[in-house]
Image (cartoon, rainbow, N blue to C red; front, side, top):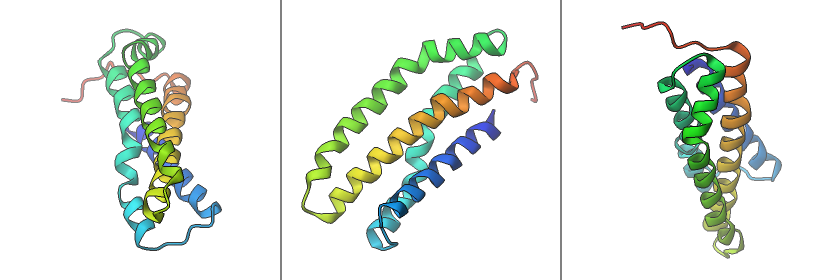
Length: 135
């Protein structure tokens, strides 16, 4: 579970850094600040779905449905409100706010996509069972 969550978070990091590089951003003070908070934004949706999956009962397929049922709407709503909040920042004249809006929107959207279509698909494909208790 934690390996797949880590892979998902790393995918978001690479995706966002690659996207802003393709947008022509070079590493400066603003970009360094934004990259330093990237991991924090990337973790949110994966952790919510992983927690719901971990605490669900049944076989892996049942756990996935339960995780989506418990957290799916909340995760989607969080993504939607964050993206909508970032849109006005696109039109700011101050460089920091304009870049922060782009960065936030990219991070949130990629994080949501990788959590829902990457992380949960990995759990479904590899049938991650939570039957073993390691403690």
